[in-house]
Image (cartoon, rainbow, N blue to C red):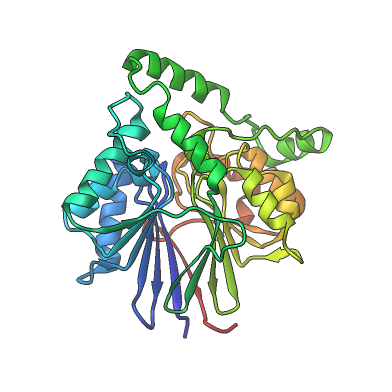
Length: 345
C-alpha cells in the first residue's frame, strides 16, 4: 500500500501542496495560494474536501511572502478550514527589532498581516535559514525535509528589501513594481519546437534577482528511497551550488519547478545536474509574467525528452500552451494532481 500522498492543488496563479503520511496521518501544507480570486476559492474547496473532518495540519511551510503563496493562509486559519500546529515562515517581522511601517509593498503588507494572524491565534511559528555544515533538516514521522534555501546571504537581501524605502509613496512603489514585472517577463514561443530551436542556437540564462523569491524555501523531501525536490520560487544559484557540492548526480522522483516554471528560475545547468522523469508546473496561465515558460519546457526537454510534465491547472491557456507536447502532459483530477509513494520502493 502506498503510504505517502502528495496533492498539488490548483491554486490558479499560485502554489498549494498537501502532503499526507497515510500511516501516521501526519500532514504538511506548503503554501496556500492567493488571497482572492478563483485560486483562493478552489484551494478552500479542495482542502475542505480532502481534509474532511480532520482539519489538523502538523506543519505548514510558507515558502516566501508573495501573495500567490501566502495570501490564502489568513482565510484558511480564520475560517477554520485548517488547524495548524506549527508554521515555518521567514517573516520580515522578525528580521528587525523595530516595528516596520507599511511601505506600500504588497508582499510586505501581507507578510506582516499574516504574522499578526498567526500570533493572535497562538500558532507556533519558527524561521529557518540554511547554514553550511548544519543538517538543515526537519523530520516528521518517516518524512525528512532537507532544506537547500534560503541561506544567510539570501535572507540579508530580503532584510535590505524590507528596510529599503519603507516610507516610499505607494504610487512610486507601484511604478517600481510595474517596471520590475516588465523586465522579468518570459520570452514567448508559439510551440516547443520553436523554443528548442532557439535555445540550441543560444541560451543565455538571465537569473531572477527579486529578493522575496531569493528568500524562498527549497527542500528535498525524503521518504524511504523516494526523493522529491520542491523549489518554491527560489533562485537557481543556490540550487546549482548545492547540487555541485554533491558526490554524485542527484536523482529525484519528482521536481516541483521553481516560480511557476519561469525561465529566470530554471536553468539548463540545473536540469543537467539532476535525473528526473516527472516535473510539476503550478500555474493556470492567467498572469502577466509569461508563466509557464516554454523556454523552461524546452530546457527540461533538451535534457529529458521523454519526461512527463504535470500541470496543476487545465485552463484554456494551459491547454493552448501544451498543444505542441500534449502527449507528455498530465492534468489534475478534481483540481488536484496526486502522487503516491511507498516507504520502500
